[in-house]
Image (cartoon, rainbow, N blue to C red; front, top):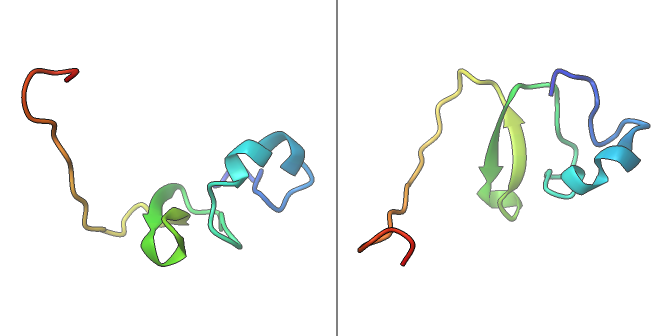
Length: 65
């Protein structure tokens, strides 16, 4: 996260709710985020130009059911 306020910063108390979703030792000053399956699907930051595979799930039937 290029804002400079990461999970290792002195402002961790302010961001502790968000920090629990990050994998260990991240964020690393990249601007995009993906989940990391090898790290229990916790968040990992990465370059926005990097491509990742994805899957969408769509409910069947009327919306809301």
